[in-house]
Length: 154
Image 1 (cartoon, helix red, strand yellow):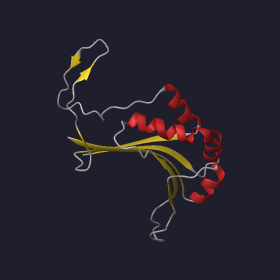
Image 2 (tube, one colour):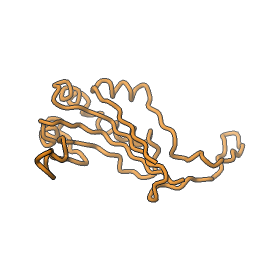
Image 3 (cartoon, rainbow, N blue to C red):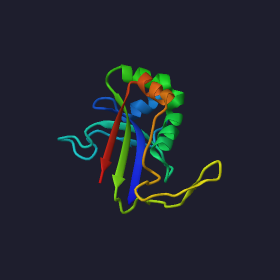
């Protein structure tokens, strides 16, 4: 099975432009979207969006999330203040696609334990499956009033 997955942190608003988010956070995003830039009525995109993405391919979701949170950690208080104003929302977005023709193929390479035992890899144990958040990461997300949005397709 081929799997592709990505994670990103997004700040969005119907009223606060992404450029204003950049100014308030004093941090450049990886991507900006302007509400109504494609079509005015109904507006597409439907919200302004400021986002930070993990650009490293082949990582498990927990590694991607760790990289993203590490990047936004320095602006933690500014994010919290921005979201507390009520005009913007923050979310950690996680997307996984099964049977994606451009995804990463499952590896059947055996694993070796610290004591030298060889563990056979069985089909269906794709190396990208599974992810977790640490208590510190959860605390960080709560401190900036951030939701988690996870989608899986396949």
